Amino acid sequence: MKMSTKELVWAAMFTAIMCVITIVIRLVPLFGVIPFSLLPFVMMLAAYLLSPRAVFLSLTAYLLLGLIGLPVFALPPYGGPGYVLIPSFGFLLGFPVAGWVQAKLLHQKSGNSLLRLVMAAVAAMLVYYAIGLPYIYMILNFYMDRVVDVTQVLKIGFIPFVGFDLLKMTAAIFLAKELRERLGVLRDVRVN
Image 1 (cartoon, rainbow, N blue to C red):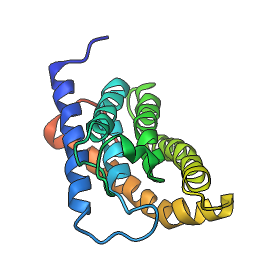
Image 2 (image 1 turned 180 degrees about the vertical axis):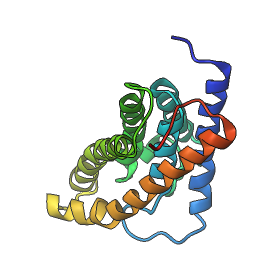
Image 3 (image 1 turned 180 degrees about the horizontal axis):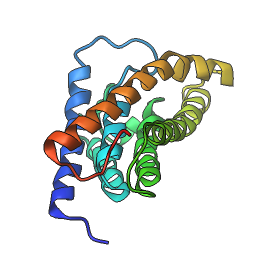
């Protein structure tokens, strides 16, 4: 199935939003190994509004822009292939897959209840945490030579962020509903 021009434009728009959000967040002082990020919000919003293929394309394009050297990531060096050695890079790797999973779950049936929207977003969160947390563990233990256990990884990359991610999920659900109604975007996102 081909993607329409409209869908490609929306996918490109979400790629641009990912870049801009990351650059703007850099203005806020960051503390800790994993920075605060609005990227899960943008990823979830994109998954509510785009097809699985378009979400995956959009988020992968964001990753590729950063890996080729454009300064679109949150931490120094802000881009380039060396960014794969940053502990939080695993979450970035997880976003295309998580967005695809969320959009796929929503595409299975037309019409989405609030529970269905929430469950799809929770599934997406589980995916990017399942990719991001082991990545933190591997980079800290095997590349940075910092000995951390699973409990420490959860304290670094999960506990401080999961509550905020649930808030981002809530905001994404209601913003997606408003965007669909006001702009007539691609996905059928209804809160019944």
